[in-house]
Image (cartoon, rainbow, N blue to C red; front, side, top):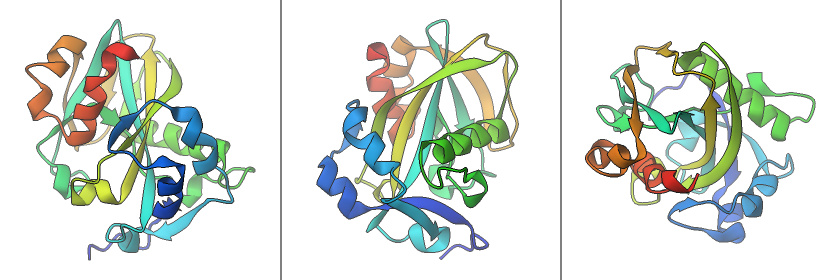
Length: 204
């Protein structure tokens, strides 16, 4: 078991996800899941070292797609990134875990979750000119060990400009690509969550 130095992360029980309606891939029916998953009665913090090897729980992971002028930001995952199982893949998504530092007055509700989203974006990127965002889908991939313990919440960030730079060594070779490129020649180079996301970009 990898040592995550006692990091606590936000999770829900896998049983709750199954009750709401388990799926494989990407699901745009956000309303069916969102309020229940972000109800403080249904989520809680768990030791990450335990959670990474426990498929009876799902870690809630914001997964932000950044869009400008119809093109989407993508990048190469570097070796200094936290998830070794994803190294060398390209990704469309920016995000990470929700931690106790994100807790707001709603305890573990929407405000806490959104504070975690903003923190993760600020840690990983420098976005010069602002954005508007919305939640558009959920992601689940039980076909691999990483996916079995994570549940993605997909956001689209509509950027005011393409002036975006990396704030971490684990995020390299940033570029904006068209939907056609991401669904075509680039698709095989993407990690699984990004492949699922790429498949619905023309619907967002």
